[in-house]
Structures are given as C-alpha cells and as structure tokens.
Image (cartoon, rainbow, N blue to C red; front, top):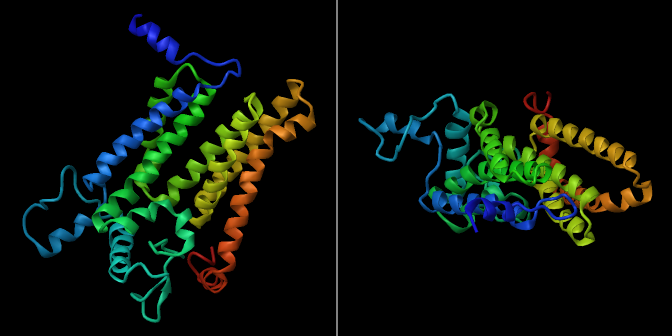
Length: 304
C-alpha cells in the first residue's frame, strides 16, 4: 500500500460526514507531546528577562532567542512578580504581598490551592513544580490549547483535510492579536468558542447519542474556565460569535428537515454543558461577593 493510499485510508470519513476519532485527535496529540517537551525544559516566551539589565551587565544567559519586550509590562512587571510572591507564600487564597491582603484570584488570577483552581488550568503547573516549570506551563497551555481547539473545529468542517486544518490553526495562533496580547484571558475564551462551534456541529450531525453527550464535558468545563478569566472584553465577543453561529446551525438544520424536537434532543448536550459551567461560575462568584463588589467599584476596570 502506497503512502497516498495510507493517507486516504487515514482520512476516510464515516457516514456521519464527521472526522474519524483518529483524525480528530491526531494533531492535538502532537501538540501535547510538543507541550511536554517545552514545559519539561522550562522554556517560555516570558519577557521577565527585562529585569536582567537592571541588576547585571552583559547578555542574559537564559535568553535563547529574541529579546524581552518591555512594552509587555502587564506580564513581566505585574504578573510575574505577583506570581513569584504567591509561590513564596505557599499559594494562599489571599496574598499578603499587598498591604492588608488581596484576593489571589481576582483580578490577577494568581495560582492558589482552593477548589476553584480546578477550573484554572493555567495555574496547575505551580501546584506541582517550581516557578520556572509553572511559568512555562502557564505560557504554553493556552497557546497550544488554542491551536488544538481551532484544529478540532476546522477538521470537523473539512474532515478530509487534517493537514490544511492544522496549518490554518497554527496560523490562527500566530496572528498578531494573540501574539501582541499573549495572555490566558485572551486565548481561553477563544478556546471555549472553538470547542462550542465544534460541539454544535457534532450535535446536529453525529449519529451516536454517546458522541453528542461526550461533548458536554469539554463545553461545561471550558465554560467555567472561560468565565474564571473574568476579563469581559475578551469574553463577550466570543460569546456573540457562538450565539450567532448556533442560530445559523439551528436554521440550517430545520431547513434540512429535522424537526424541532429532534433538534432540541441533539443540541441538549451542548446546552447542558453550558448551563453546568455557568452554574459552577455562579457558585464561585457567590464566594467572591466582597471581592467582586470592590472590583466593580473601581474606576478602572470596574467603572468601564
């Protein structure tokens, strides 16, 4: 059997018109292995090396390529120092770095050991490793997950073109918007959006009820993960895209002759997952009322 024949057999599409599981998971598996190497070597794109010139002369020995971007001060001058202090304090739910103490989750999403960290995957690296490991984990998890989510959505639409889907997904990640504002709060809402779009397609096209309900798990978890990032300016646009895409899916499915009852049954897993994620967020916010009130009472960003 030639290489071309092997490839055609690999991308063979089931009767549902959706990609086979091997195609759906192939590129995310590669991304996972890449992430294992990058995080294991504690490599990241942090600009915290901007501090090196303030205390040393010469070239930063930890710098592999490029140079620290001083304009990314939210990352290296705010996020990194707060995170280091949090690790030194043992990852409490209330940091003592700020006089009088401050909630560790809102607004800086610092790593901690409360139950809600289950929905803050970018912080898991700090629970099992040092600052270098945690920083690399926090750097690569949103980016690689974004590529994987974009690929899953694209290959759902064009199941015979996994290579093209992978290339477009990588290009999407490398777009100026994400690279200029490289933050978890920027990427995780888009991860949620791409997964929701894929889940909607699987909901109306998958022949197996089990396949449809399996999508409720990532949708539910990522709904909470997205909401826990807090930053509404990055969340709202993605929610709008998913909403209108969902409306389009409903209209097209009804035009294809599927009844309202059958359509509701097919989309129920996505809705259940979203409601479960929203309920988890509501529970979390109910434990943060004083923090949220104080946050919203500020001129920036609350007063905006």
